[in-house]
Image (cartoon, rainbow over all chains, first blue to last red; front, side, top):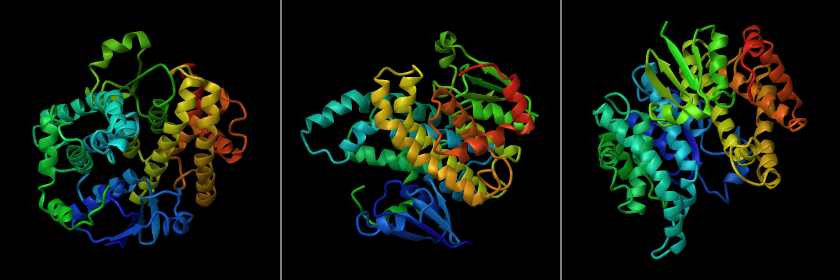
Length: 210
Length: 205
């Protein structure tokens, strides 16, 4: 077994997917967390793309979250059982990425820290949050309805399930009611988090704001 | 061999990498180009309301990189080891991140979005370029084979080369500070199957 180190900040953020894959696969890894101000500047120049997360495998770096997550998931059987299924896992992940980093971001990043009665938050929700939600989550509902297995692709858990369920669980907590029109999506997130290895990880992972 | 039908607009953009993978792999596919005026009718038949879509014996796969990786992997064009494949993917996603920022100018310039092109250029184009292309130059230097990953062409070479040529053609001089990128693109485009495709493909943006 290679020696794995995940290098990321002390948050769930873009590192959580990789950590969950390790948990699901029951593979040991060093969960290295960098203080953004004190430690990251010194490490930055050592990373291939000057960004985190970076996965270190026997001393060699792989940048970009999806790239190293796909590699890990593939190795441990969580990337789809056929090439066609694997393509669909990739497609769902990329569709989520387009959603997450597009206009939805203008609402979401404010929502994460919004206080009660934040009028800008409400304005952003109407202008960006709701329209973007209503473009993306119907696709997830449809996919779950079509597979009928409780998983997004095929009949077993893939890294697409981890990716979507993690984000959904945060949305449900941060913006209550926001996903009420997407019952399959909510059920899916709850179900994925009951997978024993994932439930165990969620219980013992460091508690961070994001 | 499955029957492949590739659906995209009549442009290169996000679809060209898939067409080039098929050509390099010498695998037949139907290159379906949907005009803007016919798109609304076709849209509801696609999984995500978007193109490109690849049909494999009638079953669709959406998302350009999912499609690209699917075909490339089956024909030895996605890296020779899992580690190399991860690096091909990493570079593709890094390009995608570049594109996310660059498109704030590029889409206005190309006429897809409304806006002040000059203002957008000043705000987004140069910073996006100068964050991304040094990584490509560095990767070419470190890899040393003339290709971005490993010692033979992979789909990331096709993606980066076509995009570099497109950008340089529409914005002459924009990549002058990155001669290695231009040289890499020339090398990839000289691969016989790619050269032939470039010669025979429909003329589009």
